[in-house]
Image (cartoon, rainbow, N blue to C red):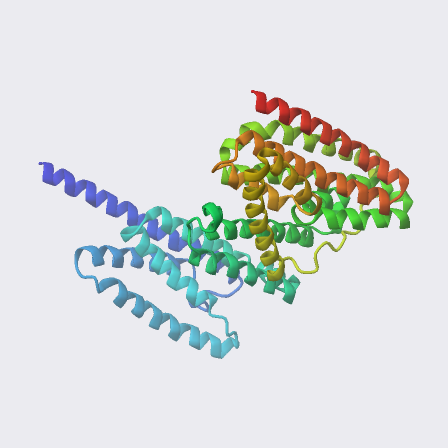
Length: 429
């Protein structure tokens, strides 16, 4: 009785998997049939029914490979491929269309059917859905390629080089004085910075100028808020009417630095979050709220063209320089802390914050995992962020109009004050 029950359960499970294989083939067939819907019956090499049956055949081959012979799948796959090749060759001769996308889709339908039975139904379903989406978005994908420039493709390949190739090869262990330098972690931080910059660049690139200063400022904070501050400040002198909107964009870009700090802490050392969230949130709101208020009052002037923040979204030399800077900061941090205690860390935060916040933030977050107290790390991060924003406020006041300078400097001072007070209060809790 128990044996019969087990056989019944197995049969039901196999039937469900075969049904799924049929549905996955049908899914791809519907998409392929929609593309060729204007063709007459019989003029298509493979339509909805063919794809559905091929998916089912893939499921049958997977089932036979498990129960009869492991040769079932490869032999059936080769047979389907040969039959499809004959059909597509004849179609190519008649139409002159050299595309083999349909052939690949048919072979994938067969493979997904086998996966649904012999590997993982969930994985097969996910792969089939992604395949259908890719097949259905031919025009959009080709449109992206038309918009893509050579230096952007080069940047994408460099990002893959430093992340998918170089990162796994680095040793994941402490080296150098006191074991403070971990090559894998240092390079992983470089990859994080590069990825954020890359995403920010393309968000601006494909979002378009019509989104206006609000959109540009928000995503410039992921790429280069310093570059945007300088550009908008200079532009305010050329077009004083747009000065309020430009000030709004600068504040938004500078405020976006603070969510980045929380992201770094959440990834590297989540224990910092409870101590960072209040000061960082207050500092961000001190910039966001005035920016949104200014933008709301002045939006009748309309958006302006997005500034050219980065001609190259990712330069490998820049990434290497960041890695070198991060290494120096880690070494200086250890040396200053041994010599001056926490005072040395704060001094390092002030000096580093003048030029960059990401490097010192990542360094202090990493050091807080070892021998740096959470309170010191939080104060150091807030100090660096405050100094960095004050520097950008000085740039806005120096290169922009007086009105723009006031709209930037006052929220910056409020942000620094609230950040310092809340960081001090958070560390006492």
